[in-house]
Image (tube, rainbow, N blue to C red; front, side):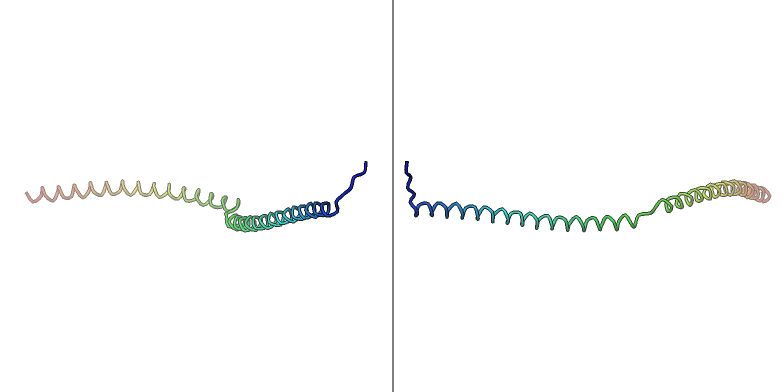
Length: 113
């Protein structure tokens, strides 16, 4: 069995296959490069978001600040209770003064009659 190859047809087939392989490899490389560029942009966006979050967290009050704030609020609560007691005392004094003034008015009005 003797097989004869036609060199012109064989070279055409080989050239077509080689060009297809080269094109496929180049297309794959371009896709990988595009993916890398896309990932690079995405990484840059994540980095800027992370920087913004770090700045926000840095500005938040810490445990010691919250504790100090709690102590100040407790102190203010005590001062408000003290002010409430003083105001209740002033209200009682004003009620007594109004009663005294009303008696003086009644006495003075009865004295004219």
